[in-house]
Length: 114
Image 1 (spheres, rainbow, N blue to C red):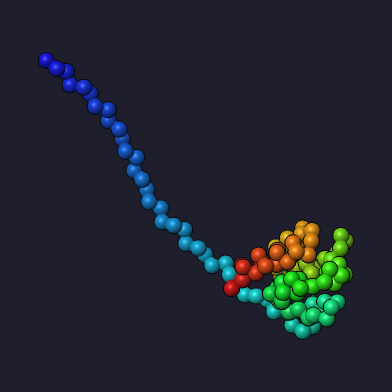
Image 2: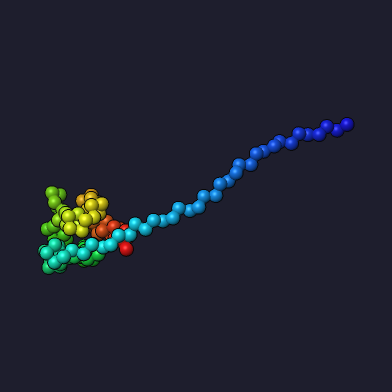
């Protein structure tokens, strides 16, 4: 008589479907500095917000940038933190080594604004 072979019983794991996390909108409003708190660049530009700073950094001469940023100071980062109230952007700006690096930080930071 042939013997029946035992079948292995494999338990199937229940797959729990997880709904994708909803993206919480962390978009903030872009802060607009009043005239008395605007940033006056040595080349004559007057900046009122982070977007204007990004544009200014992209076209600013190295001499103008060096006037505001050195190893011991960073006027742009100080202004962004104190007036525009963006401490995380200011901290990243202080870590950047070059004008292009500072500009990149500002552009990336702008993405968090609505």
